[in-house]
Length: 219
Ligand SMILES: N[C@@H](CCC(=O)N[C@@H](CS)C(=O)NCC(=O)O)C(=O)O
Image 1 (spheres, rainbow, N blue to C red):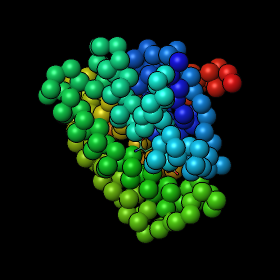
Image 2 (cartoon, rainbow, N blue to C red):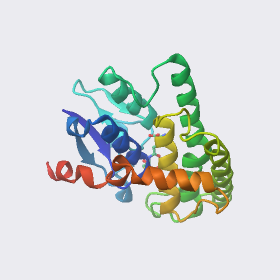
Image 3 (cartoon, protein in one colour):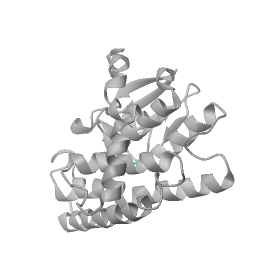
Image 4 (cartoon, protein in one colour):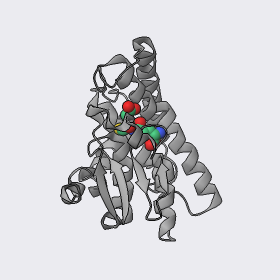
């Protein structure tokens, strides 16, 4: 069985949990918890699985490790021969990849830097270097990014195409993180707020933490 190393409430792990649920593949993986608050992701044993020291990581049955949410999502989407999240045509693949990367660069990763640099983050034992000025700049970048995605959602129902895709999942990750650090979507971004309300109603998003609990309990 495939394994996913993650932390149930983490915004990045949420992206893979959502992708799995959207694909109906929950039963195909076992979750292994890595405690971010204890810094388990920075220990040599975990770094051997993922050089970057981040969650989530997918382990295939042949022992291959795949890190990075987008890479994991692409792998899972290709597995059943019926891609629904990363695009069927060349055009869809290109546009979805671009918009997903943009959601990471402009919102999700920026909120993450804000969390790690301008707030206590994961605590003094884990956050060995903090640069608050950089953190606050990234917070402002994330707010600009929210305005950008609001302008996209004024024109179409989803981030990349007319259908739900990996790009939506990447921005969902960003807004999950923004919620955690209490960075609200600006009032005037009504299209983004409406989209976020719709996304939170999707079962894959709503039940992302709960669905793996039985698997977590399995040794
Ligand atoms: N680019 C990576 C980023 C993953 C990431 O930052 N994950 C968070 C979990 S929510 C993490 O491991 N943070 C711990 C840290 O940076 O110390 C991806 O997309 O998978």
